[in-house]
Image 1: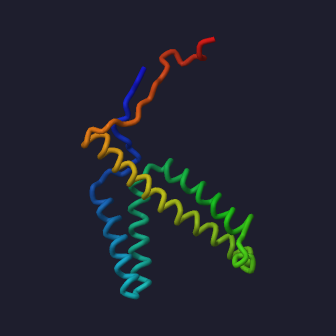
Image 2: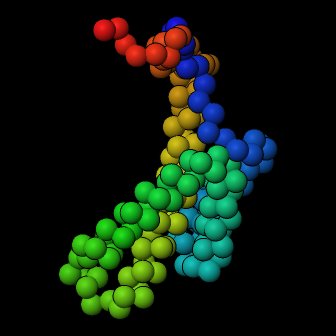
Image 3: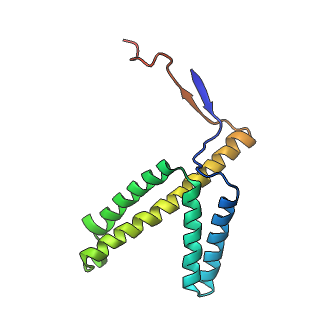
Length: 143
């Protein structure tokens, strides 16, 4: 059996307001950082992060959290750079945790953006998409 993948659906909550909140939060955060107002910029970034997390399937978020935690532990705990070695163990653990949260939100946003682009090119534009070739019997290959 040969199937074409016409649409990728990593979305969890499909309310159209959620992407708007994410985009406005990112834009407001960037504008506030440039204006020299860090506290409102952090709040805007947190709102955008929550919107991204609400828009993504929990399984995708969990995979990105595990990858972020592995990256954070590798960077700050197991193989720290010379400037990180002077930090206390608690600060390194906190850095690894914050790294994993930021990585999770950023990669969830990337997955959502890639899905939008793929759906646009494969569906609306009509370019060829991925195809799956599945075996009907589910058994072992030919001997």
